Each structure stands twice: as structure tokens, then as C-alpha cells.
Length: 207
Image (cartoon, rainbow, N blue to C red; front, side, top):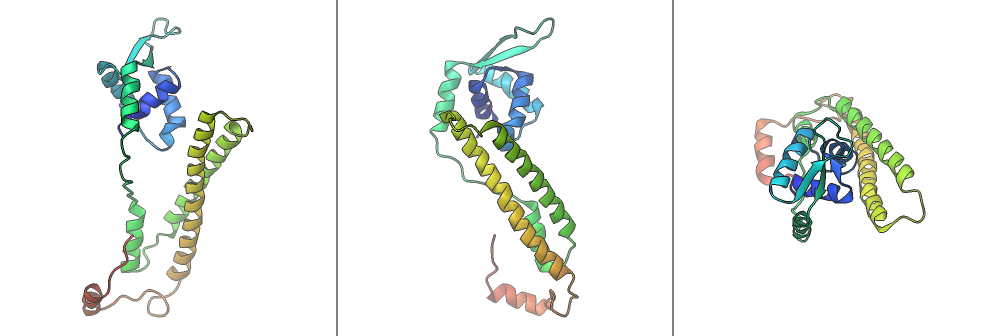
């Protein structure tokens, strides 16, 4: 997905100035599609040059250069074309998973504090999502659009809940095994010959 499609969606929801669009983007689509304000302004210029959107002086512009952006029929057609395409496969990259693999290969690397920090970040994001859910989706008679927005939010809630549960289980494992002296019940480094034999004869689990 290009940033332009996210911006078209946001502008169809509500025509906005570049500043207001960037702020709304941060609080909605920005949760799952990140873009800096500078990137948003650059993309708005390209979209206007392509005839997808147009801008006019905002009613409250005064002596400023504030512009109000709205989507043109060509932009709506582009969004419909893009939405009908098959979605690309998810490309998951998590550096911390590689660190855990390194920990498993080398022995305890002291990753528990970083994992605890990540749990706190997930907890903060979960609290934010739950606040949004209570504020925006508590009514029993939500519109179709609001119900779809709620389902998108629920995916974020489930992701944070599952991430916290997994991270707590991993933290318990690290704290228990990191405290066990190497050579007893903890991780034992194989000799170089054993390492070569394990690599040759035993399939390594993938992630």
C-alpha cells in the first residue's frame, strides 16, 4: 500500500488542511501505517499534481497559506482500483526475535530488562486502545462505518493482549533460566564438533 491510499481514505472521511490531516492520521490510520508529517505534506503535493485531490484556501486561513484538501473523482477511482487488488503478504520483521535466537545460541545475554520494557510499551498501547473503545464505540447503535472502525480497533486490542501474554511467558522463561548457572541445568555450550554435527544432522526450528 502506498501512503497516498491511506491519505485518500482519510480525506474521503473528512476534507482537511494538511496540518489537521496529519494530526488525524496520527490518531487513526497512523496506528497501523506510520508516516511523518513531512512525508504527508510531500505526498499531498504529488497527489494534487496527479489530479487525485485539489486544495483551496481554508475558510479560516486568514493571512496564512492554510489549504483545505478534498478528494476528486479521479482520486476516488484510484482508491477503488487499489482496494480491488489482492493484498500483499505480511512482511514481519522483529529485531528482538533475532536477539532471542542469539540468546538461545550463545547463552543468557541479559535480555530480560528489554523484554520487560516492551511489555510496558504494549500495556500502554493497550490502555490507549481500551480508552478509545470506551469513548468512541460504547453506543449500541453504531453505524456500519463505526462498526468497521471498531473491528479494526479490536484487532489492535487483541494484538496487544496477545503480545503481553507471550512476553510475560518469555520473561518468566528468561528469568528462570538466566538465574541457573551454566553447566548445571541451564544452557550448555556444545563443543565445536557437536555444533557441526547438530547443524548437519538435526533440522533447526524456524520462526
